[in-house]
Image 1 (cartoon, rainbow, N blue to C red):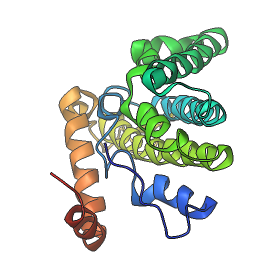
Image 2: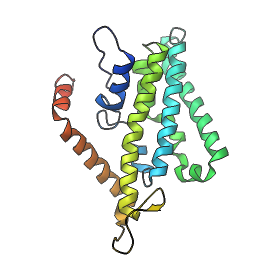
Image 3: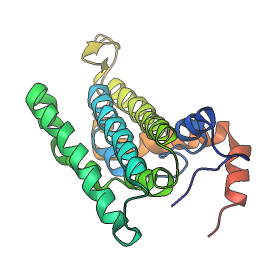
Image 4: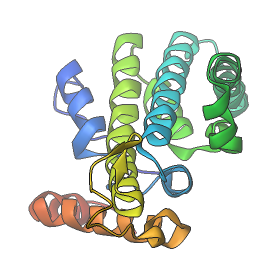
Length: 217
């Protein structure tokens, strides 16, 4: 699993935030969390709620793991991390069911599956277990935001192309635009995600080449 590059002298709040948001983005750099990125992005609203869920879970999990990092026995650290992550996932899932039932039904099992999301476990294991509390929270928020931005772009594009609307408001008039329902179906998610990753890597080819040249097989 890819780890964040650490600047000389140790990570700073700014470098940690920018690393999770852009330089080491969990989706277009590490290709993590793809299942939910493809499954829930039929609408922008779904994408944003899923993003908020991940931000909450990863930030709180990083906080808890960092606070307990000197107390967790190394042999059972992954079991403890999963238990912590599961706790915060259940908290958010129950909140969603209590206050936003319709959205809870639309997202189905995908909020619960955050427990198995490699992004959350990866940040707890690779960062929070080795860094101070404040930086660990910033790292969690940054990676969650990086994930949310990508989901929001995919969700907005799929909803717009597939229905002519965004957040339920008509953007492309039905008088002249014929919705392309293909983008609402699963293959549309693969195409949207692939095109977005290609576009981002085309914008920053030198960064990608340099990062890959130092990576192992």
